[in-house]
Amino acid sequence: MKCRLNIAKRKGDGHISQILAGFIMLHEQKLIELDIHQSDEFPFVSIVEATINNDIKVLYDMADGYTFDQERVEAYAARADYYFKRSFNQELHHQYPFASRIHPLGLNYHVTVKNNILDKPLDGSILEKTKWYLKEKIGKNYHQKFYVEHFEDQPKEQTGEPRILFATRTWSEEVDDLSMEETKVIDDRRAQCIRELRNHFGPRFIGGFSQREYARKHYSDCLLDDSKTNRTHFMKLVKESDICLATMGLFGSNGWKLGEYVAASKGIVSERLRYQVPGFKSNDHYLEFTDVEECVKQTIELASNPALLLQMKRNNYNYYHAFLRPDQLILNSFATMQVI
Image (cartoon, helix red, strand yellow):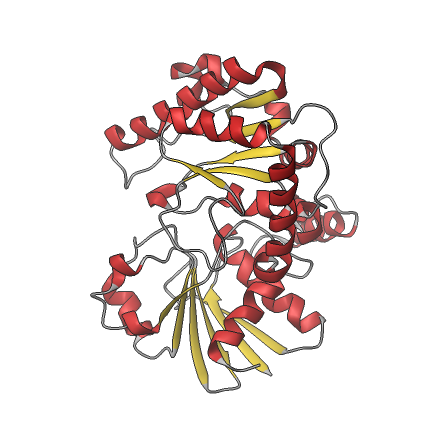
């Protein structure tokens, strides 16, 4: 099978890295022939355009919600046979002329593989590029912390009382497309969840905001130490935890951490999902909440039921290998297109 990808010319984009990683993995498995083309003219940093067997046109839209310029997207969607959308909610796109071609894709997180073109330097001096390649050879480039295998883990039985993790961030004063009133509501709710969970679980709970200026100023009692939020230590912390809490991303999107927790085979308590995820079910793969009280209640429920917790870990392990691992995500889209 021949696959050609068209992407915007830029270094790094956590949203589409998952898609490129999936295609590259399939290429390395000798299941597809792959050509990736970066273009200054391609207008979308969060969309990948694919052509399958020189015939089928496909868009993979990894945006946080429905925040795109409809007129520009429509020009590309008009020539696409399939449009796979990470943030899929039929009620929000039924009016689009290309609505019948939109399909749910699945969870998204920043994951990559060796030889992902997004991770390579586009510009810079010969010296800068040489430094990059030397660091690449010895495994010291930052993107290498996001390789597929660094997220993966087996479902483990808890030893002792379950360990609970809620690592999050503030959005206030950082997002131009949301009002301060909107972001403050989000941040206040997260802070209250942190406080209530800490009060109930004590030292079994590790949680808080990453160290941002707004968080330090307004939620000084809810901060995580920097040592816990750098990438290497954070993934170690995830793997040492039994239950991980996830909240909505921007524009109500399913956040990256949700995908990371599934990949690590964790028990999950998540804010109610606004966007459809194929095969991902409440009570099987996560317990959902809509407010602070329910957040604490659902976490207590999962923490006090070892059998439920272990089964959820196993369910998420199976889900990851059937739906979320980057190569499987792309294979599932091929199945929808009936090209395999």
